[in-house]
Length: 303
Image (cartoon, rainbow, N blue to C red):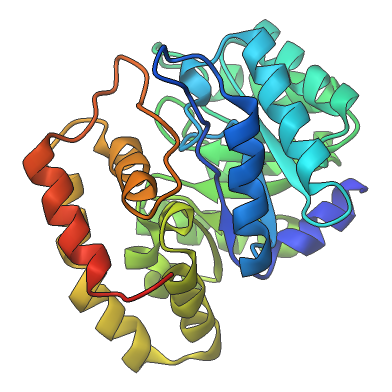
C-alpha cells in the first residue's frame, strides 16, 4: 500500500486500536490477540492500529512490539490494513518504524516522543527523520509533548511526501482550524481525543470526519452504530448514544488516572473477550467500577 493509498483509506470509515493481550504474568499472549482480531474483523473497521496507545505501546519492549505487529499482520492480511505505532526518542522511533515496515505494515502512527518538551525546530527534525527512514505512509499524532504548529506541519508536508496523516489528541479548536485551513487536503485528518465519539460532531464540523474508537474493542456493534449515524448525519442516534452511554462512561473513566486504557480492558473482559490485565504503571478498575461498567454495557444489548 502506497502512502497515498493509505491516505485514501484513512479518510472514511471507523478506525480502531486493538487491545494487546497479556496473560496473568503480564506476558504478551499471541493466540488470544489473534482471536481478538478475528472477532473484530466482521464489524468492519477500516484500519486497525497495532501496538497503539490503547494497545499499550508504551509498555512493550522491542521484541514484544515486533511480535504484536507480526500477529496483527498475519491475522488481518488481505482484509484490513494494519498501521503500527512507533514512538520514543528519534533513534528508537526509527527502529520501531523500520521494523514495522520490514514486517509488512501498511503505515506508521508516530506517537509522541518522551517526557521532555521539544522546540518546533526539534519536533520537525524528529518527525522528518522518522518519515525519511521508511517508505510507507506516516501519521503524526499531535498529543502530549508533540504539538506541532501549522508552520511546522507545512514544512513537514513539503519535506516528507510520505507524511499523509494528522491525528489530533489535543482538542485546541483554534489550532486545529488553523492547521486544517493551512494544510487543506494535504493530510488525512483523524480525531484522536480519548473516547473520540464525544467529540466527533465538533471535529466533523472542522473538517475532520474520521476518528479512532477505543470502545470498538468491547462494544463493536454500538461503535459502528454510532459511526454510521455520525457519517450519515443521524444526530438523533448520536445524541441518544452520547446521553445514554458515552457521558456516563466518560464519568466512570475519569475516576482513575490512566483509565482510558484500563476501562477498555475491563469492558472486553465483561463481554467475554478478555485481554488480561493492564501493565504498570496503569492499574485495573476496582470491582465497584467494573460493576458500574457492566450496567452500562447491559443497557446496550448484545454486541
